Image (cartoon, rainbow, N blue to C red; front, top):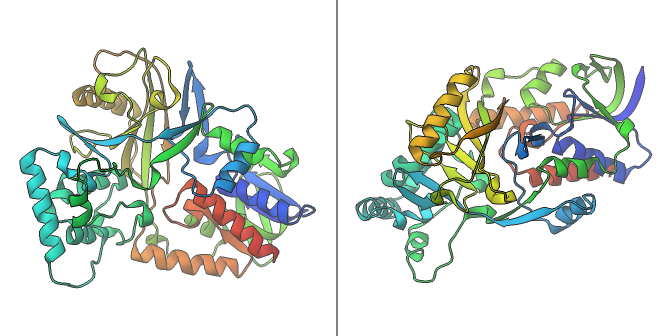
Length: 428
Protein backbone atom coordinates (compact mmCIF):
# COMPACT_ATOMS: atom_id res chain seq x y z
CA UNK A 1 0.00 0.00 0.00
CA UNK A 2 1.37 3.39 -0.98
CA UNK A 3 1.49 6.16 1.59
CA UNK A 4 1.13 9.91 1.09
CA UNK A 5 1.10 12.82 3.47
CA UNK A 6 -1.74 14.57 1.63
CA UNK A 7 -4.09 13.14 -0.96
CA UNK A 8 -5.59 15.91 -3.08
CA UNK A 9 -8.73 14.96 -4.99
CA UNK A 10 -9.17 17.02 -8.16
CA UNK A 11 -6.62 18.73 -10.40
CA UNK A 12 -8.64 21.88 -10.93
CA UNK A 13 -7.60 25.31 -9.68
CA UNK A 14 -8.41 24.58 -6.01
CA UNK A 15 -6.57 21.26 -5.86
CA UNK A 16 -3.50 22.48 -7.73
CA UNK A 17 -3.37 25.69 -5.69
CA UNK A 18 -3.43 23.63 -2.51
CA UNK A 19 -0.71 21.28 -3.76
CA UNK A 20 1.55 24.26 -4.52
CA UNK A 21 0.89 25.88 -1.17
CA UNK A 22 1.39 22.64 0.77
CA UNK A 23 4.71 21.94 -0.95
CA UNK A 24 5.81 25.52 -0.20
CA UNK A 25 5.00 24.97 3.48
CA UNK A 26 6.65 21.53 3.68
CA UNK A 27 8.78 20.72 0.60
CA UNK A 28 9.55 17.19 1.76
CA UNK A 29 5.91 16.18 2.38
CA UNK A 30 4.45 13.72 -0.11
CA UNK A 31 1.50 15.38 -1.86
CA UNK A 32 -0.37 13.44 -4.52
CA UNK A 33 -3.08 15.00 -6.71
CA UNK A 34 -5.50 12.44 -8.13
CA UNK A 35 -7.71 13.51 -11.06
CA UNK A 36 -10.41 11.34 -12.62
CA UNK A 37 -10.17 13.05 -16.01
CA UNK A 38 -7.37 12.44 -18.47
CA UNK A 39 -6.22 16.07 -18.31
CA UNK A 40 -5.99 18.66 -15.52
CA UNK A 41 -7.97 21.86 -15.16
CA UNK A 42 -11.48 20.84 -14.24
CA UNK A 43 -13.86 23.35 -15.81
CA UNK A 44 -10.87 25.56 -16.73
CA UNK A 45 -9.89 23.30 -19.60
CA UNK A 46 -9.47 24.84 -23.05
CA UNK A 47 -10.32 23.58 -26.53
CA UNK A 48 -8.29 24.65 -29.59
CA UNK A 49 -10.27 23.80 -32.71
CA UNK A 50 -10.13 25.10 -36.29
CA UNK A 51 -8.22 28.19 -35.18
CA UNK A 52 -10.67 29.01 -32.36
CA UNK A 53 -9.81 29.11 -28.64
CA UNK A 54 -12.68 28.05 -26.36
CA UNK A 55 -12.87 27.14 -22.69
CA UNK A 56 -15.25 24.58 -21.29
CA UNK A 57 -17.10 27.70 -20.22
CA UNK A 58 -16.04 31.33 -20.11
CA UNK A 59 -13.46 31.59 -17.31
CA UNK A 60 -12.16 35.11 -16.97
CA UNK A 61 -9.94 36.11 -14.10
CA UNK A 62 -10.69 39.08 -11.83
CA UNK A 63 -7.70 39.50 -9.52
CA UNK A 64 -8.04 41.46 -6.29
CA UNK A 65 -4.70 40.17 -4.96
CA UNK A 66 -1.83 41.47 -7.14
CA UNK A 67 0.63 39.03 -5.56
CA UNK A 68 -1.45 36.04 -6.75
CA UNK A 69 -1.63 37.39 -10.28
CA UNK A 70 2.12 38.11 -10.25
CA UNK A 71 2.86 34.57 -8.98
CA UNK A 72 0.82 33.04 -11.79
CA UNK A 73 2.25 35.28 -14.50
CA UNK A 74 5.79 34.47 -13.42
CA UNK A 75 4.97 30.86 -14.30
CA UNK A 76 3.58 31.72 -17.74
CA UNK A 77 6.70 32.87 -19.61
CA UNK A 78 5.97 34.11 -23.10
CA UNK A 79 2.20 33.90 -22.68
CA UNK A 80 0.23 36.89 -24.00
CA UNK A 81 -2.15 37.77 -21.16
CA UNK A 82 -4.78 40.31 -22.17
CA UNK A 83 -6.11 42.85 -19.66
CA UNK A 84 -9.61 43.76 -20.78
CA UNK A 85 -11.99 46.50 -19.67
CA UNK A 86 -15.26 44.64 -19.52
CA UNK A 87 -18.25 45.56 -21.64
CA UNK A 88 -21.44 43.65 -20.89
CA UNK A 89 -25.10 44.35 -21.39
CA UNK A 90 -28.62 43.02 -21.09
CA UNK A 91 -30.32 42.35 -24.42
CA UNK A 92 -33.99 43.36 -24.30
CA UNK A 93 -35.46 43.05 -27.79
CA UNK A 94 -34.49 46.33 -29.47
CA UNK A 95 -32.91 47.86 -26.35
CA UNK A 96 -29.48 47.15 -24.89
CA UNK A 97 -28.98 48.11 -21.23
CA UNK A 98 -25.51 48.14 -19.70
CA UNK A 99 -24.79 45.71 -16.90
CA UNK A 100 -25.64 45.85 -14.05
CA UNK A 101 -29.23 46.39 -15.11
CA UNK A 102 -30.43 47.90 -11.84
CA UNK A 103 -27.87 50.71 -12.07
CA UNK A 104 -28.63 51.52 -15.71
CA UNK A 105 -32.41 51.54 -15.94
CA UNK A 106 -32.20 55.09 -17.33
CA UNK A 107 -31.25 53.42 -20.64
CA UNK A 108 -34.73 51.85 -20.86
CA UNK A 109 -37.54 53.49 -22.84
CA UNK A 110 -38.90 56.40 -20.82
CA UNK A 111 -42.12 54.71 -19.63
CA UNK A 112 -40.23 51.62 -18.48
CA UNK A 113 -37.60 53.72 -16.73
CA UNK A 114 -40.23 55.71 -14.87
CA UNK A 115 -42.00 52.53 -13.76
CA UNK A 116 -38.77 50.95 -12.51
CA UNK A 117 -37.67 54.15 -10.75
CA UNK A 118 -41.07 54.52 -9.12
CA UNK A 119 -40.94 50.95 -7.81
CA UNK A 120 -37.45 51.44 -6.36
CA UNK A 121 -38.64 54.66 -4.71
CA UNK A 122 -41.67 52.94 -3.17
CA UNK A 123 -39.46 50.06 -1.97
CA UNK A 124 -36.99 52.49 -0.40
CA UNK A 125 -39.77 54.30 1.51
CA UNK A 126 -41.57 51.20 2.74
CA UNK A 127 -41.60 50.81 6.53
CA UNK A 128 -39.25 48.14 7.87
CA UNK A 129 -40.83 44.71 7.75
CA UNK A 130 -39.76 41.13 8.34
CA UNK A 131 -36.44 40.12 6.87
CA UNK A 132 -36.90 38.55 3.44
CA UNK A 133 -37.09 34.77 3.52
CA UNK A 134 -35.64 34.05 0.07
CA UNK A 135 -33.55 35.48 -2.76
CA UNK A 136 -36.70 36.40 -4.69
CA UNK A 137 -38.30 38.07 -1.68
CA UNK A 138 -35.13 40.09 -1.16
CA UNK A 139 -35.20 41.28 -4.77
CA UNK A 140 -38.79 42.48 -4.57
CA UNK A 141 -38.26 44.08 -1.16
CA UNK A 142 -35.19 46.06 -2.22
CA UNK A 143 -35.92 46.87 -5.86
CA UNK A 144 -39.63 46.55 -6.50
CA UNK A 145 -41.53 44.88 -9.30
CA UNK A 146 -40.24 46.72 -12.40
CA UNK A 147 -36.54 45.79 -12.22
CA UNK A 148 -37.17 42.32 -10.88
CA UNK A 149 -39.67 41.24 -13.50
CA UNK A 150 -37.89 42.82 -16.45
CA UNK A 151 -34.54 41.23 -15.77
CA UNK A 152 -33.55 39.79 -12.39
CA UNK A 153 -36.27 37.17 -12.06
CA UNK A 154 -36.44 35.79 -15.63
CA UNK A 155 -32.67 35.84 -16.11
CA UNK A 156 -31.81 34.13 -12.84
CA UNK A 157 -34.57 31.55 -13.25
CA UNK A 158 -33.05 30.65 -16.61
CA UNK A 159 -29.58 30.50 -15.08
CA UNK A 160 -30.34 28.56 -11.90
CA UNK A 161 -33.19 26.53 -13.46
CA UNK A 162 -35.22 26.75 -10.25
CA UNK A 163 -37.75 28.90 -8.42
CA UNK A 164 -35.83 31.80 -6.87
CA UNK A 165 -37.94 31.40 -3.74
CA UNK A 166 -35.89 28.25 -3.09
CA UNK A 167 -32.60 30.18 -2.84
CA UNK A 168 -31.16 31.84 0.24
CA UNK A 169 -31.29 35.63 0.52
CA UNK A 170 -27.50 35.77 0.14
CA UNK A 171 -27.30 33.13 -2.59
CA UNK A 172 -24.96 35.26 -4.73
CA UNK A 173 -23.04 37.00 -1.93
CA UNK A 174 -20.78 39.84 -3.05
CA UNK A 175 -21.38 38.96 -6.70
CA UNK A 176 -24.90 40.39 -6.66
CA UNK A 177 -24.75 44.10 -7.62
CA UNK A 178 -26.58 45.94 -4.84
CA UNK A 179 -28.15 49.28 -5.66
CA UNK A 180 -29.99 52.01 -3.79
CA UNK A 181 -32.27 54.79 -4.97
CA UNK A 182 -29.37 57.22 -4.48
CA UNK A 183 -27.16 55.04 -6.71
CA UNK A 184 -29.74 55.11 -9.49
CA UNK A 185 -30.18 58.87 -9.22
CA UNK A 186 -26.40 59.35 -9.25
CA UNK A 187 -26.24 57.39 -12.51
CA UNK A 188 -28.22 60.18 -14.18
CA UNK A 189 -25.57 62.81 -13.46
CA UNK A 190 -23.67 64.17 -16.49
CA UNK A 191 -20.20 62.74 -16.84
CA UNK A 192 -20.85 59.95 -14.35
CA UNK A 193 -18.52 56.92 -14.47
CA UNK A 194 -20.23 53.81 -15.77
CA UNK A 195 -20.48 51.19 -13.03
CA UNK A 196 -19.76 47.69 -14.29
CA UNK A 197 -19.99 45.69 -11.09
CA UNK A 198 -17.27 43.88 -9.17
CA UNK A 199 -15.30 42.82 -12.27
CA UNK A 200 -14.80 45.95 -14.36
CA UNK A 201 -11.55 44.53 -15.72
CA UNK A 202 -10.40 40.97 -16.23
CA UNK A 203 -7.43 39.13 -17.65
CA UNK A 204 -7.39 36.33 -20.18
CA UNK A 205 -4.44 34.48 -21.75
CA UNK A 206 -4.28 34.18 -25.52
CA UNK A 207 -3.99 30.41 -25.05
CA UNK A 208 -7.18 30.19 -22.98
CA UNK A 209 -7.87 29.60 -19.29
CA UNK A 210 -5.78 26.42 -19.35
CA UNK A 211 -2.68 28.64 -19.29
CA UNK A 212 -3.45 29.55 -15.67
CA UNK A 213 -3.79 25.84 -14.91
CA UNK A 214 -0.40 25.23 -16.54
CA UNK A 215 1.01 27.96 -14.32
CA UNK A 216 -0.29 26.05 -11.29
CA UNK A 217 1.36 22.89 -12.65
CA UNK A 218 4.67 24.65 -13.30
CA UNK A 219 6.33 23.89 -9.94
CA UNK A 220 4.72 20.51 -9.31
CA UNK A 221 6.71 17.37 -10.22
CA UNK A 222 5.03 15.10 -12.74
CA UNK A 223 4.96 12.29 -10.18
CA UNK A 224 2.73 14.43 -7.95
CA UNK A 225 -0.13 14.35 -10.48
CA UNK A 226 -2.08 11.17 -11.28
CA UNK A 227 -4.42 11.76 -14.22
CA UNK A 228 -7.17 9.39 -15.30
CA UNK A 229 -7.41 7.92 -11.80
CA UNK A 230 -10.70 8.01 -9.93
CA UNK A 231 -11.12 7.82 -6.16
CA UNK A 232 -13.85 5.27 -5.46
CA UNK A 233 -14.00 5.12 -1.67
CA UNK A 234 -12.43 6.66 1.43
CA UNK A 235 -12.26 4.77 4.73
CA UNK A 236 -12.22 7.48 7.37
CA UNK A 237 -11.34 5.11 10.21
CA UNK A 238 -8.29 3.50 8.58
CA UNK A 239 -7.36 6.60 6.53
CA UNK A 240 -7.19 4.63 3.32
CA UNK A 241 -8.47 5.78 -0.05
CA UNK A 242 -9.23 3.27 -2.79
CA UNK A 243 -8.94 4.36 -6.41
CA UNK A 244 -9.65 2.41 -9.57
CA UNK A 245 -5.90 1.56 -9.62
CA UNK A 246 -4.62 1.21 -6.05
CA UNK A 247 -5.00 1.84 -2.35
CA UNK A 248 -3.44 4.89 -0.72
CA UNK A 249 -2.85 5.42 2.98
CA UNK A 250 -3.00 9.14 3.75
CA UNK A 251 -2.45 11.54 6.61
CA UNK A 252 -5.06 13.95 5.31
CA UNK A 253 -7.32 14.50 2.30
CA UNK A 254 -8.01 17.82 0.58
CA UNK A 255 -10.84 17.54 -1.93
CA UNK A 256 -12.34 19.93 -4.46
CA UNK A 257 -14.87 17.33 -5.62
CA UNK A 258 -18.54 18.32 -5.20
CA UNK A 259 -19.33 18.02 -1.51
CA UNK A 260 -22.21 15.51 -1.95
CA UNK A 261 -19.91 13.27 -4.01
CA UNK A 262 -17.17 13.44 -1.35
CA UNK A 263 -19.68 12.57 1.37
CA UNK A 264 -20.81 9.57 -0.65
CA UNK A 265 -17.18 8.42 -1.07
CA UNK A 266 -16.62 8.52 2.67
CA UNK A 267 -19.96 7.01 3.63
CA UNK A 268 -20.46 9.90 6.07
CA UNK A 269 -24.02 10.47 7.20
CA UNK A 270 -25.55 13.46 5.45
CA UNK A 271 -28.82 14.85 4.15
CA UNK A 272 -28.53 14.43 0.38
CA UNK A 273 -31.80 16.34 -0.13
CA UNK A 274 -30.11 19.50 1.18
CA UNK A 275 -27.94 19.74 -1.94
CA UNK A 276 -29.37 20.89 -5.26
CA UNK A 277 -27.81 22.32 -8.39
CA UNK A 278 -28.38 22.96 -12.07
CA UNK A 279 -26.68 21.65 -15.20
CA UNK A 280 -25.40 23.91 -17.97
CA UNK A 281 -24.95 23.02 -21.62
CA UNK A 282 -22.26 25.19 -23.23
CA UNK A 283 -22.05 25.57 -26.99
CA UNK A 284 -18.80 27.00 -28.35
CA UNK A 285 -19.55 28.39 -31.80
CA UNK A 286 -17.13 29.64 -34.46
CA UNK A 287 -18.32 31.66 -37.46
CA UNK A 288 -16.74 32.64 -40.74
CA UNK A 289 -16.63 36.36 -39.94
CA UNK A 290 -17.36 38.99 -37.32
CA UNK A 291 -20.81 39.65 -35.93
CA UNK A 292 -23.11 42.60 -36.57
CA UNK A 293 -22.23 46.11 -35.29
CA UNK A 294 -24.42 45.73 -32.21
CA UNK A 295 -22.02 43.09 -30.89
CA UNK A 296 -18.85 45.10 -31.49
CA UNK A 297 -16.76 45.33 -28.34
CA UNK A 298 -19.14 43.20 -26.26
CA UNK A 299 -17.77 40.54 -23.92
CA UNK A 300 -21.01 39.25 -22.38
CA UNK A 301 -24.65 39.62 -23.30
CA UNK A 302 -27.43 38.55 -20.91
CA UNK A 303 -30.77 37.33 -22.25
CA UNK A 304 -33.74 37.31 -19.84
CA UNK A 305 -36.31 36.60 -22.60
CA UNK A 306 -38.02 33.31 -21.82
CA UNK A 307 -38.55 32.49 -25.51
CA UNK A 308 -34.77 32.26 -26.06
CA UNK A 309 -33.12 29.02 -24.88
CA UNK A 310 -29.88 30.63 -23.65
CA UNK A 311 -29.32 33.01 -20.77
CA UNK A 312 -25.83 34.30 -21.65
CA UNK A 313 -23.56 34.68 -24.67
CA UNK A 314 -19.86 35.48 -24.44
CA UNK A 315 -17.59 36.78 -27.21
CA UNK A 316 -14.08 35.36 -27.33
CA UNK A 317 -13.29 37.30 -30.51
CA UNK A 318 -13.79 40.61 -28.72
CA UNK A 319 -11.19 39.52 -26.17
CA UNK A 320 -8.63 37.75 -28.33
CA UNK A 321 -9.14 39.68 -31.57
CA UNK A 322 -9.40 38.08 -34.98
CA UNK A 323 -11.74 38.47 -37.93
CA UNK A 324 -14.18 35.68 -37.02
CA UNK A 325 -16.93 35.73 -34.41
CA UNK A 326 -16.30 33.21 -31.62
CA UNK A 327 -19.02 32.64 -29.04
CA UNK A 328 -19.90 30.60 -26.01
CA UNK A 329 -23.60 30.15 -25.38
CA UNK A 330 -25.01 28.82 -22.09
CA UNK A 331 -28.27 26.96 -21.42
CA UNK A 332 -29.36 26.04 -17.90
CA UNK A 333 -31.49 23.06 -16.89
CA UNK A 334 -32.49 21.33 -13.65
CA UNK A 335 -30.24 18.51 -12.47
CA UNK A 336 -31.18 15.23 -14.04
CA UNK A 337 -32.69 16.75 -17.18
CA UNK A 338 -31.10 15.43 -20.36
CA UNK A 339 -29.95 17.71 -23.16
CA UNK A 340 -30.78 16.89 -26.78
CA UNK A 341 -27.66 18.54 -28.17
CA UNK A 342 -28.63 18.46 -31.86
CA UNK A 343 -32.09 19.89 -31.24
CA UNK A 344 -30.76 22.56 -28.89
CA UNK A 345 -28.01 23.56 -31.30
CA UNK A 346 -30.68 24.30 -33.89
CA UNK A 347 -32.70 26.25 -31.32
CA UNK A 348 -29.61 28.21 -30.30
CA UNK A 349 -28.80 29.15 -33.89
CA UNK A 350 -32.41 30.22 -34.45
CA UNK A 351 -32.38 32.20 -31.21
CA UNK A 352 -29.13 33.95 -32.07
CA UNK A 353 -30.60 34.93 -35.43
CA UNK A 354 -33.85 36.13 -33.81
CA UNK A 355 -31.88 38.22 -31.30
CA UNK A 356 -29.71 39.68 -34.08
CA UNK A 357 -26.43 38.29 -32.75
CA UNK A 358 -26.05 36.30 -35.96
CA UNK A 359 -27.22 37.66 -39.31
CA UNK A 360 -25.72 35.98 -42.38
CA UNK A 361 -22.58 34.62 -40.71
CA UNK A 362 -21.93 30.93 -41.35
CA UNK A 363 -21.15 28.45 -38.58
CA UNK A 364 -17.83 26.80 -39.44
CA UNK A 365 -16.89 25.04 -36.19
CA UNK A 366 -18.58 24.06 -32.95
CA UNK A 367 -18.05 22.19 -29.71
CA UNK A 368 -20.21 21.47 -26.68
CA UNK A 369 -19.73 20.43 -23.07
CA UNK A 370 -22.11 19.78 -20.18
CA UNK A 371 -21.21 21.18 -16.76
CA UNK A 372 -22.81 19.08 -14.01
CA UNK A 373 -22.92 20.47 -11.40
CA UNK A 374 -22.77 24.00 -12.76
CA UNK A 375 -24.32 26.48 -10.30
CA UNK A 376 -25.06 25.13 -6.84
CA UNK A 377 -28.33 26.19 -5.24
CA UNK A 378 -27.44 27.97 -2.01
CA UNK A 379 -30.36 27.52 0.34
CA UNK A 380 -30.82 27.71 4.09
CA UNK A 381 -30.72 23.94 4.13
CA UNK A 382 -27.55 23.67 2.05
CA UNK A 383 -25.73 26.29 4.12
CA UNK A 384 -26.45 24.44 7.35
CA UNK A 385 -25.76 20.95 5.98
CA UNK A 386 -22.58 21.99 4.13
CA UNK A 387 -21.17 23.61 7.27
CA UNK A 388 -22.06 20.56 9.42
CA UNK A 389 -20.68 18.07 6.89
CA UNK A 390 -17.41 19.93 6.30
CA UNK A 391 -16.84 20.19 10.04
CA UNK A 392 -17.53 16.47 10.48
CA UNK A 393 -15.12 15.60 7.67
CA UNK A 394 -12.44 17.92 9.05
CA UNK A 395 -12.58 15.99 12.33
CA UNK A 396 -11.19 13.09 10.27
CA UNK A 397 -8.61 15.31 8.51
CA UNK A 398 -10.66 15.46 5.31
CA UNK A 399 -11.04 19.01 4.02
CA UNK A 400 -13.51 20.03 1.32
CA UNK A 401 -12.63 23.24 -0.55
CA UNK A 402 -13.47 25.27 -3.66
CA UNK A 403 -16.75 26.25 -5.25
CA UNK A 404 -18.11 22.72 -5.27
CA UNK A 405 -16.27 21.41 -2.24
CA UNK A 406 -17.56 24.36 -0.23
CA UNK A 407 -20.93 24.28 -1.99
CA UNK A 408 -20.81 28.02 -2.52
CA UNK A 409 -20.56 30.82 -5.07
CA UNK A 410 -17.05 32.20 -5.47
CA UNK A 411 -14.43 33.32 -7.95
CA UNK A 412 -11.43 31.37 -9.24
CA UNK A 413 -9.14 33.66 -7.27
CA UNK A 414 -11.19 32.96 -4.12
CA UNK A 415 -10.36 29.27 -4.60
CA UNK A 416 -6.63 30.03 -4.66
CA UNK A 417 -6.92 32.21 -1.54
CA UNK A 418 -8.85 29.50 0.31
CA UNK A 419 -6.40 26.76 -0.69
CA UNK A 420 -3.41 28.79 0.46
CA UNK A 421 -5.07 29.64 3.76
CA UNK A 422 -5.85 25.98 4.43
CA UNK A 423 -2.29 24.92 3.68
CA UNK A 424 -0.93 27.57 6.07
CA UNK A 425 -3.37 26.57 8.81
CA UNK A 426 -2.59 22.86 8.51
CA UNK A 427 1.14 23.55 8.56
CA UNK A 428 0.92 25.66 11.73
